[in-house]
Image (cartoon, rainbow, N blue to C red):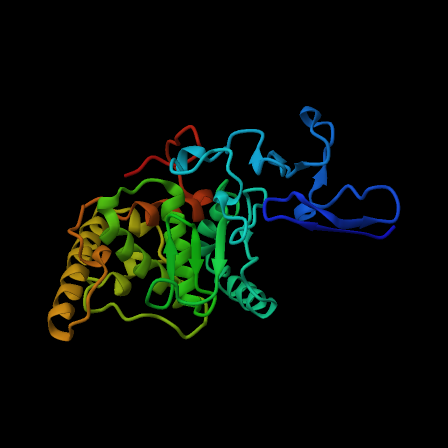
Length: 306
C-alpha cells in the first residue's frame, strides 16, 4: 500500500492533498495511530499514549497531567499552541526535533560521556522520566555558553559539554519545583559548582575555575569521594556554611566585574542571597547514593532533609 498526507500545523489533513492506494493507513499525524471510535469523531482523533488528541480542534481530550506546573497555558493546549516550533511527544522524553542529524549525534555523544558521572546520571534520569517535555537546542541561547529557559523549557547547548551539564542541572532545579524567584543566585551558584565538578570527573579536560568565590568547596576533600565526585559530605552543616559564603562571594565577584569591566551581569547573578541553600544538589546526591544511605524516608522514597 502507498499512502501520503499533507497536514496543517495542528494535524488536520489538507483537502485534496492526500492519497492512499488501499485501506486507510492508521498511523499518520506525528506517526500516531488514529482512533475513529473516540467520541464519535471520525478521522481526527489520535492516540498519543498519554492522552488522546483531536487534530480538528487542536486540543487534547483530557487535562495535562503537569498542568499545575504551567498555569499560564491551557491544560488542553497542544504544543503550547506553537506547533511550528514544538513537537508534542508523550511527555516523558527529550525533544531533539530542533537538532540536525549531526547535532543529534554530538548531543548523544556528550550525554554518553556525562553519564559516567553518577550525579549527572541521577538528574538526567529525573528529566527523562518527567511529565514535562524539555526541548534540546543547539547554540548558546540567552548569552554565555548555554542557557535554560524556564518558560519554554529549552535547554541550550549541545556545543559545550560543561554548559550542557549545567543547563541540564538548571532544568532539574526547575523540575523539582523547590525554588522561588528569590533563589536565582543560589541556583546559579549550584549550577556552576555541579557542572564544574562533573566536567572535572568525566575526562574531558574541562573545568571552570571558581577559586575566586567558591570558598574552597572544589578543593575540600570532605565534600567528594575518591573519584572527586560530590558526595555525602555535601549533606553536612559545614557545607551549608561554605555554600552560602560562596553564593555571597559569587554575587560580589559579578558586582565588582560590572564596575571594573563594565560588563553588565544578569540580575540572577547579583540578586541578594536568599539563604535557601543547595537544595537541588543535596537532592541529587541523595538520589545518586540512595542505595548507600540509611535513615527514615518520606512517603515518596526520598530521605528527610538534614
